[in-house]
Length: 100
Image 1 (cartoon, rainbow, N blue to C red):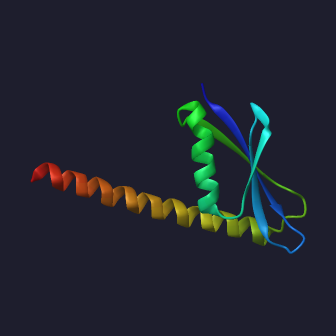
Image 2: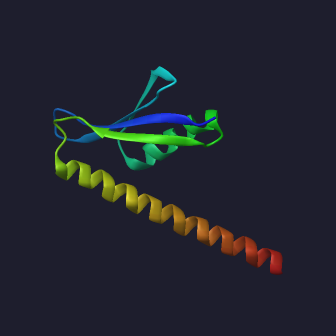
Image 3: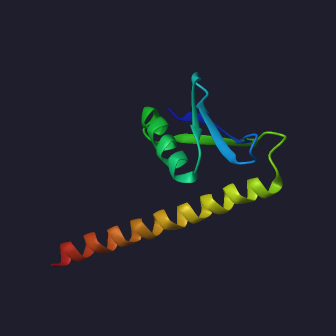
């Protein structure tokens, strides 16, 4: 079974973006994420209920600017690239330990 998580980019009165996430199967469980690392951690926790098999539906409130959306995308891509690099180093280290 897979889960559907909604991720909505919002903005506060100070003009700072944040992401509100919720599991559509548990609408009462709303989480607020102030940065991408916090978002990734909370998505991973929510995904455990579905063995990591989740779909994420993105949206943005009407008062969120294109610049804010671009910043979220840019930070998400940077985070994913960083995680991929970490995974590659870990895989290389494991391969080297098996060769020894």
